[in-house]
Length: 293
Image (tube, rainbow, N blue to C red; front, side):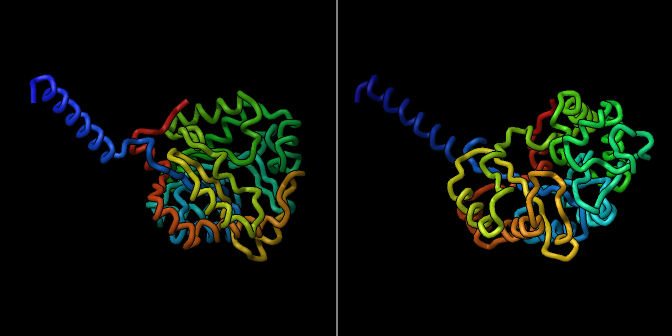
């Protein structure tokens, strides 16, 4: 073998080794990664039970606390007892349920533009906006919600928002991002996640597990976000009625079906077989992958 041919042979062998090593390392971006975020922890006793079940026996990786909601204190205690849970503050300016309302964390006379005449949050984004909410009052209340969580011994890993009211105007979105920077917390959905692919919110209850399985089977490499709303089929949750015109009917059916889907053996088996990596925002932060706008 002459020197030229020998040189090319060694060069090609070197490239082959480099590519093999690169494949063995499985660089970031070639994995299927999934954040499974549960919303509305603290909303009801049944929701808190559902979250605990989903954390312990399911694929739930993150849970958002509604700090002003009636069962927040119970949820906070559960979080303190389970510090391995990755939890966030589900920033809230609405109380959307018929006959089941809540007020701000602050005395409502300090944030009058955020509440109705009885001091309750408005049930819809439209009603919230029609009352002329002041951005400075929005900031005061949202900050109070984060501070209340911290005061209860919660160490949040992220922020996100309840319903769409805080996404309707740039000035409200700016408040959320300002708090994220101040508290060093990422905003869920703004860390490079694809949320649309795994959207099963409006999928019929009897089809949620099936659709989730199909999505897990067909997902390509990337970082995804699956948002669920854990609940149980109990008299408490059967009584809940959404006042939003486009709200789901029989909410308990959808929420309990999501719990069944994310605790399903079939779902967990596919995640294992496809080597899908379940991640929390705590994981993303530790990996240096969170973003602050």
